[in-house]
Image (cartoon, rainbow, N blue to C red; front, side, top):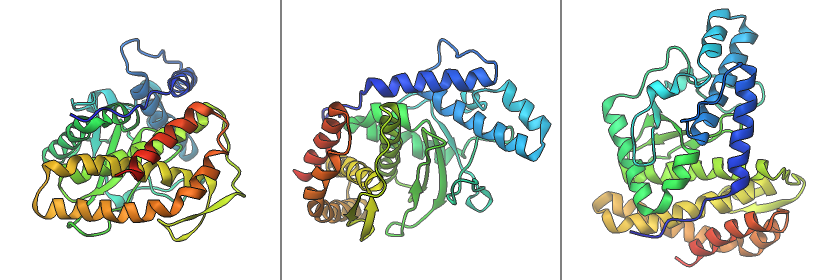
Length: 299
């Protein structure tokens, strides 16, 4: 079994506890002693988002429901996995709202939420186990608490996935009904959630006026987006290199092609990555980003 990557970063754990305590304070709810801090942190943000939307809409019953469920009922919806209890849902992408601060669609756990169908639960459970087996269990345990499976697509189609700063610990992703590929995309978005939390936990606000060329978008990107890409894509490269040995056929060819593509893109960013890392005022965080980037470059 490959060695786990080091995702331990104590400021993140402090952030999780502090923000959860503050949100639960708004609901006059105590943080459960047996709850995992990362789970409570993610679910508290779902309740906060849902309660705010209900308040704006004047929907008192729904607002009261969130008051009574500061975990957005996530604990009851959870399915056991190799990385802990996970909430897996299958919202209709066409019905997902957009917030006033972002055009990106999102889904919030609420009183009408039901778990994903058994086939999608099994797919996601296996994907978590696969990713954990290859060293990413800690990342997914703390930063992929809620998975929203969106469109089922054919292998080779464009897969769209994303994460949002206002719903940390939540992953939105299309899938091709294969756990090895889904594991890759869960790691990618959990990586974004990790870096969002890491930067927030040290109070780092990157200068958006400083830009770098992103080969993934073939455009200039602010330092925040560039560093995110130089962290999340290397994570998926490391995972893909590790999981290739247990794949075959079309899935093996698909993932091998993905890894070759990412190698070519990453090698064009070495000089800019060094400059971008210098913008982060925390040596420990710098080193974690540098280590993952270097391992991906070596593949």
